[in-house]
Length: 166
Image 1 (cartoon, rainbow, N blue to C red):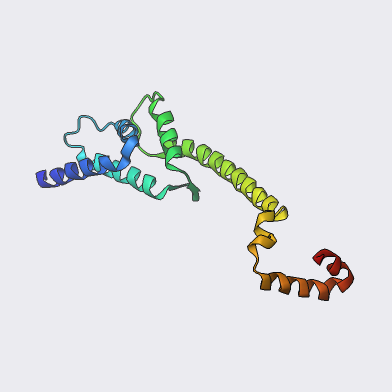
Image 2: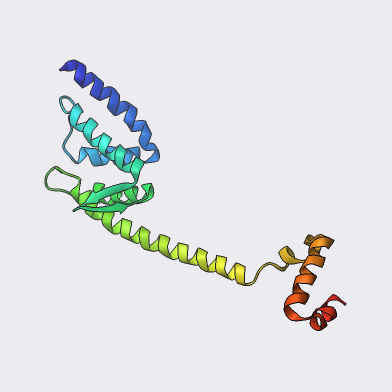
């Protein structure tokens, strides 16, 4: 019994560093489960920290058979909301946290969709108004220029191309 408790304590200590700047939020959240005093509750603390570590690592959670993606910043935001809320009793599951994370996840999804659309439009505009320096004669060898002129003559006609070459 005592050996297992020691293993749990070692696991808890080693996992704490893995949360980085969010460690205090995670610990405040874990305390909402009524795990203080720590004596005799090390297994519950270890399990809670493992679940939070899994969430931070995968940045994915499930709620009511749906899968949601969320960033570590979004998880921290949700933890901050939960930690600052007053609960009458101790928490017994992560459901309240998950409900908060759903809203944040959906907001992040909308924002990333908007950013992806902006990036796509920027790329399309760049292709439409191709950088003239990329296609200039300065960047082409004389053989490439001559080859382009031959192809142009074949397609358009020698009269127009002759005027362009002069």
